Each structure stands twice: as C-alpha cells, then as structure tokens.
Figure 1 (spheres, rainbow, N blue to C red):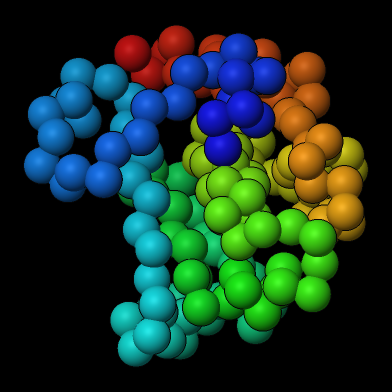
Figure 2: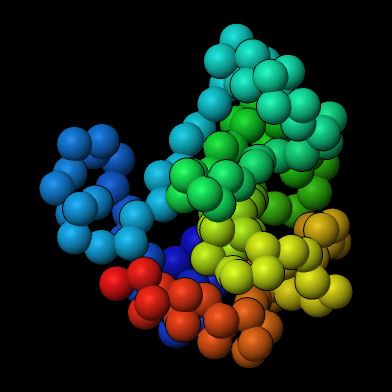
Length: 139
C-alpha cells in the first residue's frame, strides 16, 4: 500500500485505532475488513459482484474489503495475501481519491490485472496528479 502511494507522491498513514484524533485534522479514508456473516450481509445488501474483493464508497470515504475472498483469489498465484491486501486497498483508495473514480486501461486502477505483474503496478502520472490535487483541495 505505502510503496504504491509513495510512488504517486502521496503519504499514507495507517492506524488500527478507531478512536484516533487525527481523523478530524486530515483527509481520512476508513478501511473496513469484513468477513463471515458481516461480509455476507453486506455483499447481499449492496449487491456486490461475486468476484469483487473490495468495494469503495467514495461519498462516505470508506473502503470495504471482503477478507474471506482474498485467499481463494490469490493463493494459487505467486502473490502473498498481505501483498494482495495492500494492492486491493490501494486500488479501492484510488476510487475514493480520483475525481473520475473509474478504472483505467493500465496500472493499478485496471479493473482486472495479471497478479504476476502486481508488484509493478502503479498509478499513472495523470492519476497521481489528480489524487494530489484532490487531497490538496480537501484540506
């Protein structure tokens, strides 16, 4: 997650503490890991696609990750679950931070990508500029 955003010129700070005070002082996007029954209820209620590993809610500045789906999606490939989780979160954060909030033809914002190239996935120059502008305007 951090190396993808560092390459885009964006500093990402993470915290597992839900009560941290920094939320009020800076642009914050909450990442929610859902598993089991809670994930199943969310997936049904929001009509999430069967193969989706995560979903962004740009208006709420929230990303939902379906933890139970990550392992089966990447275990047969040469990508660790932790690395896959970071890339999934980076992609979904892109949906929140990019004005167009759409998929691109190349880079980390592709709708589907070959996991064998996942360690080289980055934001395009245009996406990086757009996210930095979005963040600056949100301050």
